[in-house]
Length: 230
Image (cartoon, rainbow, N blue to C red; front, side):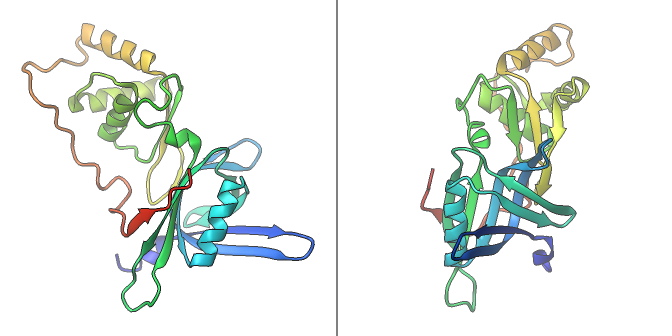
């Protein structure tokens, strides 16, 4: 964790009115960003820390659909929004030697929120925070209720890449991707692969054990989270 601050980015929110100027700048440790053709971007995930006033201002701006300026290591300044109906949570991170804890805000786009199991089974896009093959298969299977086993992870990734159904997104503290396809299409892939023996069903009935995905976001989160604003 030495020099971890060097891996942080910055989120800046500026708003001018007829009688005042709001200029808030906070540090950002996690980001999932999807560029758009109009030069702006959609932020599917942001995680920022700051003092009470700054985090409160960012929280209000997110709910109001405002645009932010983001930059970080290997990320040039870009304008972004979280789109309509984002979800966010606020919490506190106690710091030794500091009287007041840092305030922590995590916000996600509506599209990312709908990747939860049963969230939107008709969607053709799934935003994921990691590109590990086992993680990709697990999250897609969980979302669409697909019958899979971890041993199929490499096959599934090869199918996605061969069909150009997976693409990288811009990330800070993670390696996000977007997977394109419906649950019905993925189930069809599985059925055809089993028939041609590209993948095999387990020989015996036993619990399915997935690897740990604790390191997908680089490290476990700290502090407590509360005050949902979805």
